Length: 106
Image (cartoon, rainbow, N blue to C red; front, side, top):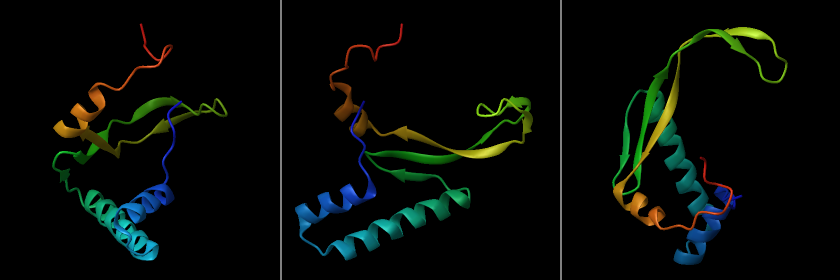
């Protein structure tokens, strides 16, 4: 399984590269994520050139759905989800990553 990187890890990595104060870096990252959240909430598409695009999309509801934990039948109304499309530079950066055995679906 791939290593999980947390917001704390990102703050630490930026700190080591820039030597800005960790509190300042944390504040900037929090402000950025809040702005992304608010923009998506308002229906905006967020394009970060070379990285990717975030956009809200409507997912259709279902009359018959099942809670996987309890098995209870329920209905799900149409709702918004966030879709991410990776940018060209990100795609190229990930293209040659080695694929571990057992991760290839047939």
